[in-house]
Length: 562
Image (cartoon, rainbow, N blue to C red; front, side, top):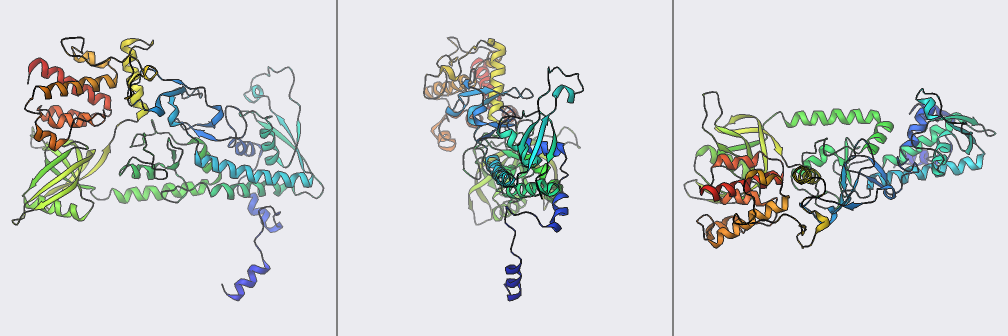
């Protein structure tokens, strides 16, 4: 800092957060947001809980995107007709208190919203400071609640109108104080009569308070991935908030929260139908910084355009591969040698799609869906050939493709399963349809074993007893029962030493997994059925659907011995 700069700082100190604005600052503060009665009411409503109407305390953002106080959560109950995943955090749930949602939320998906809690704390702190100044100056505001029926244009049903209340502070501080005292319903509208204190600056008081509130809250509104203002914020079940497109990128690599590393149960594509925007945070940002939101939107759109201007990934047209399962490849064609060398120099990934015979000259010779493979190990031979060991990462759909140096390149979109909450809803829907709403198969409330399966669940049975006899029977079975039926079948086949369950196959693909999410991929990798049948698994979006397909194979195998 130069001596001249130091002198300027010394003679023009920065104003403190509680000091009054200078006269030349007033027009700038007033121009930020037009502070009419409606605008002030909307700002204070950002702080209120829609259930208790008090300032949000330990706010929780529900999976539907709506927020409320932690103490305002409905009383939880044991969830029925759910056998997968049935983890401890998902055994209890509650009906959403907001009529526009009314879905059942797992209690484990509803933790304190860290960003909203910090923002509310910052906002309340600045309003408390402003209220202290108002008390010292003697400024007061008369607030009168409007009759909600009259606001709606309907004749009032009230016997008498509510009397105006005299509250310390300007309009903004007084409205917040009234909320804090429990005197203003969340949905209520108000009118103001400001009573000026001697020598008070009525015009600039609310503008200054708003300016300080915005400056304080702004510090809490940056995404911890891109370090910019939130855009289309999503709050994870662990309570951390990120931009939707930022979290999408993170989930491309790992299903863990970037802040706390908790495993996330959200749908990885983050569709708005299942992964809702945090309404309270998004409303706050749009209300306070609408110009910055518009700039963020333009920047994200430009970034997306640059990403899709070229091809995403090289694609190998060869065989059928599955997520989490190994695929071994012998690379000998010059075009694929080049492709693999470039993949090794990059992120070691490429796509694998199944070859299919084209029906006409205009048809393509590969399937639309495939699996991204990551190179785990490679062994080169002196003549240029190589042996690759790869593992499946995720599924994808080809959007467009072209040829580069003899091999295929493509733009793709990732394919992911529905969220855990939607998986549970699917199981409840299908089992209830077959068994009635009384409960049918047990759920977590009947849990009697360590694996989370209910003691009254329909357990897998052999065909000689009461097991599923047709594919239609599979529709009504709990997800865990489907898994048990399939794994018991594998156990019986191993006892019979069938040729597709040899020690060599176990060495390649591992032992039979007890995770329902991994079992279908493992089962399809070792069961000798046609690739066209196995390809059906890539088209599914839920663990339950894949388990039903696998159990259907078992029924056909036992009936016909393919």
